[in-house]
Image (tube, rainbow, N blue to C red; front, side, top):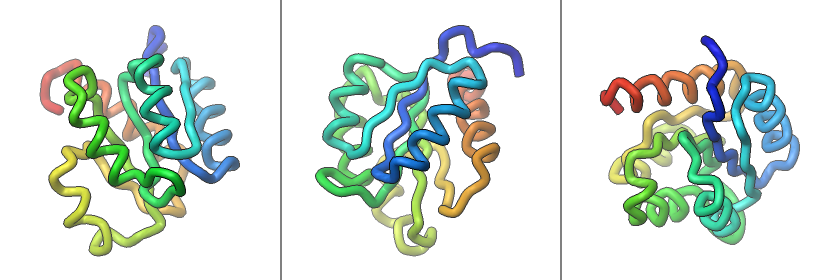
Length: 132
């Protein structure tokens, strides 16, 4: 895929290694990257960054990913931004809670980093084409 031309991604994960690794990968793909270690911090970063796609861990201290997704969807500016959730939980453990939050994709940990970048790129294409 060609350069993202300034596309912005917000990476939210309390695991510093995962957050840094995803930040590096997205920077290498031409994205502008914002990051946060919990949902509360991420709400503030999102307001400043206005990301094109959000990658969010579900299990975090302070504010978990479920609450973050709920709150971000309440803001008109963020209603259409694709959310990609990461989780160490199995799908059966989070599916019911995540269902009403209009999530683009769920990726279980451990994951291949290339899968996250690919999902983010697919999400951006679906938004541009209007099929998100």
